Image (cartoon, rainbow over all chains, first blue to last red; front, side, top):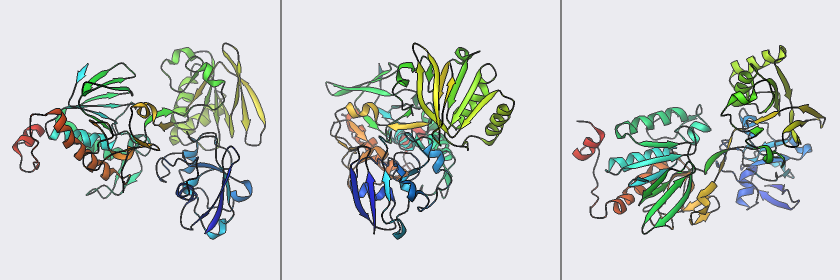
Length: 106
Length: 337
């Protein structure tokens, strides 16, 4: 289990325990965290599970694979620390991860 | 007013196969889709990506799958209404009156929604002032390139649309091309051409920049763009173009009185009918216990919804189940001997 904090655009925090092996997107959906749509279901075929990763965590999570940045071009207000949460694997190493949710997904 | 036995909304794989099933059992149908081409998400989002879980097809791309489905529909000569979005659905004494944003109207006892995650719309700029200039000095698609002649045009985006238009318009306009990162995702030849034009001074390239704000009164005068390192540049421009790809939005479907669960429509698993008689939902947009968002599930759902349409379209006839291998009526419809 890894403790992950999802911070809504309003500042509201959701701290949930996510089983390792899942993705950060799945952790949000399973725990009813609002603000992550995940329209395509985790296939890296949309950009509606977009999150901003807290800077100190950005280099600790698994790296982007080919295609993720192309999809992020289509996200709402992408920034340097943008990721698709369906591509972030939950492992013991990311216990304590904090991600910020954008103002909206679409 | 077009009269049809069933109207299919959405020309993705599920919509296409549903139309096939409708025609196979002797019903007529027409298809409406907001995109300018047939194929839905398969063609818009992953034309080149391989799919491995279509029964009996070990591997095919989104584009190949679409081509095959179109091929399978060939015998039926189905009318497609592309570039049109269904805006209005109203019930009038038992039949559905449907209207698109282009003014096409249909009257039908059956509507099958195969709408995926809704309709594709261009991703727009975030700053609020952009709205004011939309379709006058700021565009997400180009209809008439003549208006840009001898003007300064600032293009945002890093995909094929942004690159192709930057190259094309650089012949007669001053071009600024702004992208949020160093790499472009367009065709390699276009990327190289843009870099070459940038060296020649025909295109001003700004990478790792994004739009911060728009300045102007009646017309656009300049844009402020911000670098990853927070540095802000102001560039003079007459026009702004945004090519950030398409996003999926539920759109008008939300207003048709259907029973929604988040962005999906609840249906039964016998007819895939919604809470409205004669309106069905199939494919990714429908929801029921155990629903899988797989193309193969969409095919099954479409086949059952098509049979349900028969009852309302031919109330005085009885539907008889037949196999394509043995039915003479089906072979006649397919035009095979």
